[in-house]
Length: 148
Image (cartoon, rainbow, N blue to C red):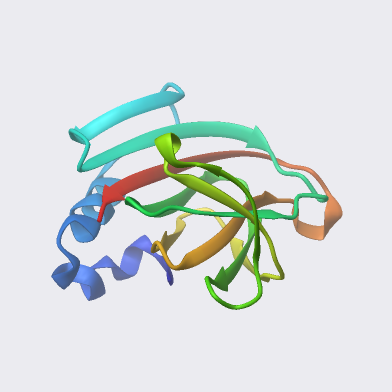
């Protein structure tokens, strides 16, 4: 897992498609972009512009096997609980065709604020969309999927 701001993306130049995605995030204004799914490099790199309300009660984590997630906060803030796979998780549901597995597990929260991002690899469980200070907030976020 990587947690940083776009001001520091030069630190990740050696990460191939991950760096390509970070450069794209740094150069793009998402504030007025319509919600939806967009392709940057076909199935190798695509992204989703999302808007949602955070949930103070969210506890189910997820993981992916075929894609790395880059979660970038455009507006708002949320907690993202993180934990490594193999720590103490229990799989509750799997939807392989959508590359998502859900888990009950303990996670450690990290606050994703505007202009910050997290790179979540297939071994990183993550529980996004959790409200900070137990208060729901509307967020606009971009999730970039980078093929492993």
